[in-house]
Image 1 (cartoon, protein in one colour):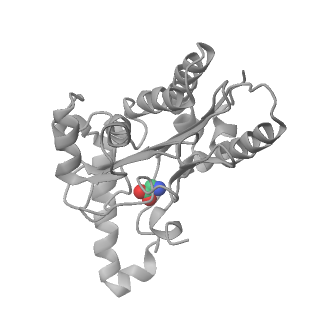
Image 2 (cartoon, protein in one colour; image 1 turned 180 degrees about the horizontal axis):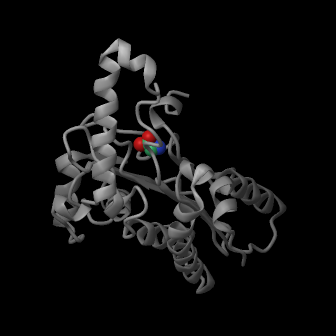
Length: 269
Ligand code: GLY
């Protein structure tokens, strides 16, 4: 079994999907694979930022790999990998989620099983410590695919998931990023100043959405994605990450994909 370095992992989500297709068509014995990403901004991280993220990325890969090595399912492998990244403050998912314009943390996550094409997602969850478990709950325990807001938190609580106060999601650097984004927004309202400032309102706003895709020994594919969304997003804004077919997709006959980037743009296509 192979895992990939952080720099490669950032690029590889779509490639694994192609690998899955090739192997499935050949009807060969399946060699389990897991690939993760830690967000689009992996492409322009400084050395220091890269280093901070490298260890948790490895830990997440190893968590997913351990599941696959024991003969576990692709679904369990991607869940295990995502949970590690959700618990790490350096990624924009779970603990390290970015802030909405009103200072809330609203979390989106989804998961899809390529063997059954069942899927589950939560959006705008405010109190689920590991939103990926909320997504899995929607898939396993309801006949719905996406549950949002208070309903998602209620479902998670009723089913015994670990719930946390909004304070749990506070990180100083995300809070500072919100202040910076707000300041830029103000500047843009003043046309003279706007000329002198960057039009990129939300500098690297999506730093650290996380995703995982896996192929297990039975040839089953799974994909999962978790995010806090974008800094200074409107409270109530939902991105691509909890949308099946946009942020996440898995189908044994074709691909497993987890996306990262500005969801408002690419969820339209
Ligand atoms: N891709 C994450 C988001 O746009 O919310």
